[in-house]
Length: 310
Image 1 (tube, rainbow, N blue to C red):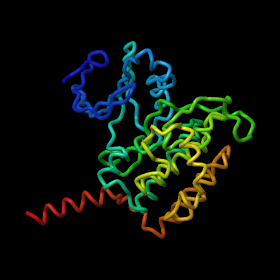
Image 2 (image 1 turned 90 degrees about the vertical axis):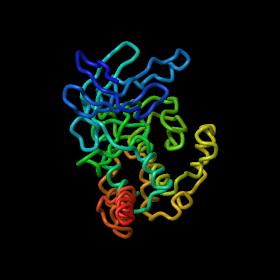
Image 3 (image 1 turned 180 degrees about the vertical axis):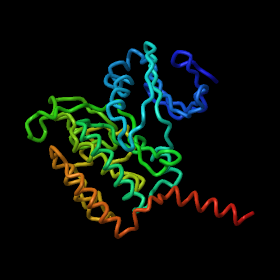
Image 4 (image 1 turned 30 degrees about the vertical axis):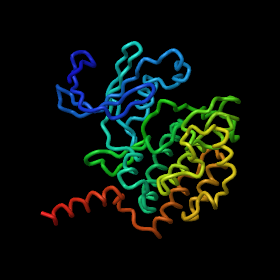
């Protein structure tokens, strides 16, 4: 189905890639150029949910992507179209997100894959933070793999909840924003501070969320998962506070405990290089940095099995 999006520029919508409370993402092809793109549409928000959508502006996300354009693992924005309460953004088409790939691999990744992902995911956050931006919604679904020649590159997506922080503030941890802010992000992966709502989120909160994501990718679950994310936020927070690092990182290289300690220390500028070095040291014991992720190996094995059966 072809739709006019910008002037006389038409796109053939090929598939619905995802749908949320406030928008939809489609895979589409330009009739003029044949280029495959992703189109994110922000739907009109019902009145009861209007307050919830505050800060999830697609126009804002487009501006952030334009600001970050050129960074490795950052989706390339093409253009933005405003249509009243139904804005749309055209941007680089990407592959599957880590949540989808996790399901395809049986719900758990091997340690080697987790450590290779950690290396790239940490690099994406370092780049984001170097531009004084906090993402505030780090979760498996917001990391996707590229396509074609970029198939081994991890992309960080969905900047609808991100905030710019003031780089001119005094170098004192925990004073970036106002007190009493509402919980923002996904409860399962949110930092303890995001639950406590004492201050606005900082770079360290993104890193703590990343630690929970990595543990989830390896174990397929987190200790505070009960009835999904329907469990009250305060109960999830108390569970995070109650579990010791040794319990949380059981079966993981000791570097994971050090990483979470660093994240919870709320440093103004986290030691990204040292953290990446820790993960690479752990990877040296587990395997090599060859970008042969579990889903890549599984795909190769599947093709070999098909050949041998014919």
